Length: 271
Image (cartoon, rainbow, N blue to C red; front, side, top):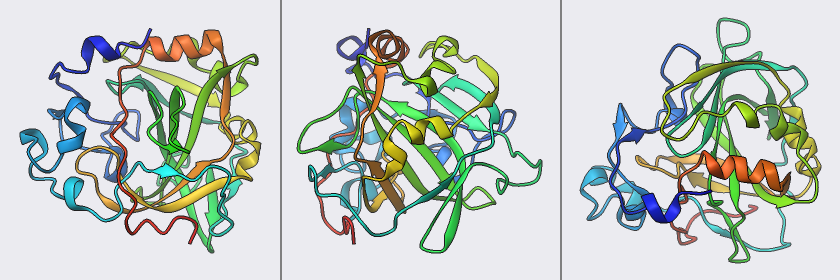
């Protein structure tokens, strides 16, 4: 059961974010804050303003391309279409970032991220660095959220963040082969365990949302402090469907982690 009502108002110290390597801390997008995060989702509406824990991250409050946003139902993007190359199984660390499951990829070739799953758009290639979930979904479509959202974090070969693919998640009558690979191994939200996972097939996630043939794309930001901008988002039009058992398991290791909706400003949705 999602612990929303119990924990939303409590000011807790939680690990700030996913890490990219099994034994090292992440940089860029994965490293949302140094050490322990003192901000809380209960005050996400005042991050960078009156919220003292994030008062130095003023872009959270006055940024022009903050995420997440409400996306127009059935009005999909046609530009910046991603072409995925997710064929090779991957290994890395499965853990809980304090709000839900997270996974950090190893440097597959031992040097950089260029051998990791990747996709190409606008003649540039970005490589998967990590993924993590939020519950409920951070992005809204037509004003509505789903039960959870998976963020696939990508960057250049050196690990500098460039963009995120968002897959919304809802319960259904079918089971997700992608989720089934790890759902029984996720540590609890209060656990510091890091579990090595080998042979994870990320291509299943993309296949289960129709190859991301339907998507929205826009200029956005991190969804937690420091709320850095300059990232491109792709949000799938199709929802990743999971079974009731899978959904309850995901929510059972999750804590409320959806930032308040941000006003659309210079996001250039689909442009």
